[in-house]
Every structure is written in structure tokens, then in C-alpha cells.
Image 1 (cartoon, rainbow, N blue to C red):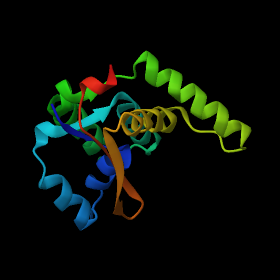
Image 2: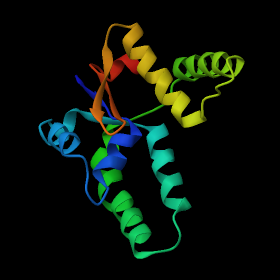
Image 3: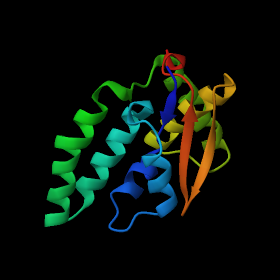
Image 4: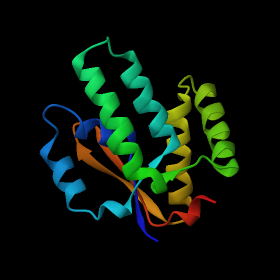
Length: 143
């Protein structure tokens, strides 16, 4: 099984009022079944919604998240495994020693991306406006 692990900011870009055209066209050119999310991205998105003041926009985003995105990706939300958590710990420790600690969710995503690249199974591609896409070739590589 091959696919693409989407970074949180790719999903965030797509729900903007005016998303970057290159991001939209890249996503829409892919088979949806080949797109994956990390559980870390689920947490980051939920945190972003929780930080919004009560508003129609927040309600719309939460409704979309619960009734569209989660069911749509249900079988393609990748867990953080023991080996990924271990990698995150090393990455975060090294980053803290360098004075640049990682946030937990960003660190977990970085550990997943590093695992894919270390195994020769992926790369990261810039799609503009600071949006990155972690590209992976296999869900089983996470185990």
C-alpha cells in the first residue's frame, strides 16, 4: 500500500477561506485513499479549533472535522508507535540541547517523517506558503 502522510499545515491550508492553489491542485490530483494523517495532526487540528473564540467559523470547522474529515480518514489515521515515540524523544532531547525544543505534535510528525526517510521510503516536499507535505510510500513502515 502506498500513500502520502499529510502534514497538519496541509489540512489547515485546505480549510482556509482562500487556500493556496498549488496545494489544492496537488491534493485533488491524488487518490484520496492514498492520503494519510497522523494522530498528531488530529490533536493539532483539535487544538486549533479549541483556541478559536466561539463563532460561526469555529462551529463550522468543528462540524466539518467531526462529520467529514474524521469519518473520511477513519482507516487512514496513523498511530504513533513505540519506535516513533522513541525517535521523537531523541529528536526533542537533541533539539532542547541546541536551544530549540520541539512541540510534542510537531516532534511526533518529524519522527514519523524521519523514520520514512531513514528507511528510504519518503521525502518532504514544499508546496508553497510554508506548507510542507510528508510523502511516504507505505503504511506498514510505521509498525
